[in-house]
Image (cartoon, rainbow, N blue to C red; front, side, top):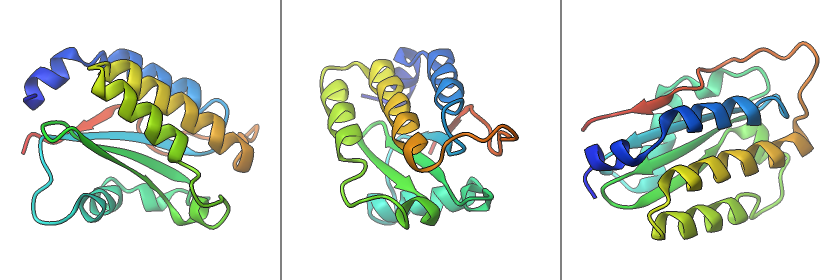
Length: 147
């Protein structure tokens, strides 16, 4: 599916609302990035570079999560910052990835991303509960790269 079509089917306002809701549970920061294809490297490498480019390594607790989506390749990668990696067990994101895969295979892109964001917020709340003085450190909007 071409990225334009993917984005037309994606209810971005629901996704942004899901990010906002998930971040009420945790001090973690969740971002979504969509681009057509992975060029010049493997999926993980490109996702990690995007994570850095979006300033996600600058959160106070290093607890940002990026859902990187290559829409035309129907692939995604979940990248967590080092603060998360230092605290969570192996396989921490496996159920999120499984749910997202299932929804994407069914063509349920909005529902898949909303589910993934909700699950990420719930997971992060265990290790990074929201503090009373928590501030939103990163934008909640979807980052879209056209090329």
